[in-house]
Amino acid sequence: MTKFNIPYGRHNIEQDDIDSVVKTLQSDLLTQGPKVEEFEHKFAKYVGAKYAVAMCNATAGLHLAVLSLNLKKGDRIITTPITFASSANCARFVDAEVWFADINPETYLIDIDKTRELLKSKPKGFFKGIIPVNFGGLPVNLEDFKKLADEYDLWIIEDSCHSPGGNFTNSKKQDQYCGNGNYADISVFSFHPVKHIACGEGGMITTNSKEIYDRVMLLRTHGITKNNMKENHGNWYYEMQTLGFNYRLTDIHASLGITQLAKNDKRIIKRNQIANKYIKAFNGKVKFQHTPSGYLNAYHLFVVEVKKRKKFFEFLVKEGIVPQIHYIPLHTLPYYKSIGYENADLKNAENYYKNCFSLPMYPSLSDEEQNHVIKKVLEFVNKEY
Ligand SMILES: Cc1ncc(COP(=O)(O)O)c(C=O)c1O
Image 1 (cartoon, rainbow, N blue to C red):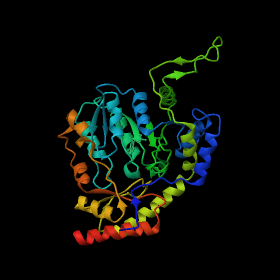
Image 2: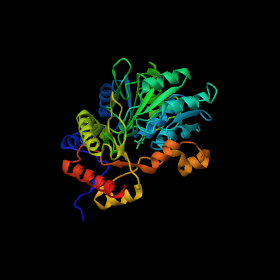
Image 3: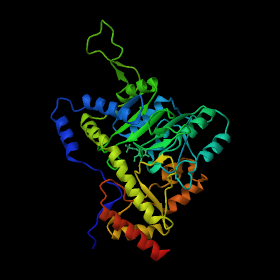
Image 4: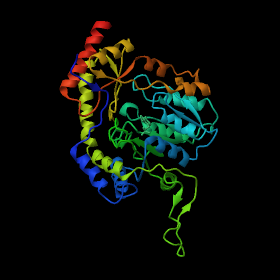
């Protein structure tokens, strides 16, 4: 029997988070109150974008992102097969087609050369947009993707669910924070508990476009607005201008988001310290996600590749370590198979999936716990390889 019970990810709720939620619970407004707006303003400032709109989760955010960019039935987008289903499903919500570009075998991110090949293989106008994913917390180089997107008249939705606070240095030596809107039309973040900022459920989209912002605001609340009041209208007057949804975040969730956001930079430093310790211990022995220089990996995950993965998984579980696999390639899931993706040629993604493995990564992981993880990983590798 081991005394350890170490998950791959864990939320981190402190007294100030609890106090903030309790204060909202004691206030007059539980939803559509001041906390959502405060969270939006603070989040927009944090990532350096003009606008932020809070949502009930990132999947809703991705849905409104594609709607606000007018993605329609029969249109086509490109994304990575190594991501959570929502990054691709958002296109399916509007009956658009998903095309996958293979990953880079070192960074595990969507490969720009494979994306270019795909674009070149079809006439201009065939694709409408690209949805790159900052997988594991490592930002995609959106400056390069934006150049490619401009060549083919595409929009970009940055799936930044793994990377609030991550950045990369662009060709002008400026740090580009995920979600700042300099290259992507829209960025989407998740506040699921296992992510950096835990709201329970929650999401945010950021953009620098007033037009997209207005459209997302309208769609988030049933397509209803009070923005068209005339002098002769009573105060009750509103208009439903389009078919929208109830994708609002509550003030309860937002008040948690505000206190969590304030701690994000400090926690990313801790996540990087944990990653550096893994890297030092595994260098030359275990392959891990490569973070090129000039990139601040927000380290939502610490992903390694191991042989005999199932045996390794079972061995770690016995040792009190509960890892996870991110992700089963989307084109191999029954739903995507059933709509014709069965024979997609995505070798890097499939090879990656055979060996990938997410080790514990969260700011409250103690030294003792991490030492135990490292010891057990190396024990397995030394014995089995
Ligand atoms: C890359 C990615 N995109 C989108 C989502 C969807 O986020 P949510 O659970 O907030 O809808 C997730 C959640 O796991 C994710 O990891």
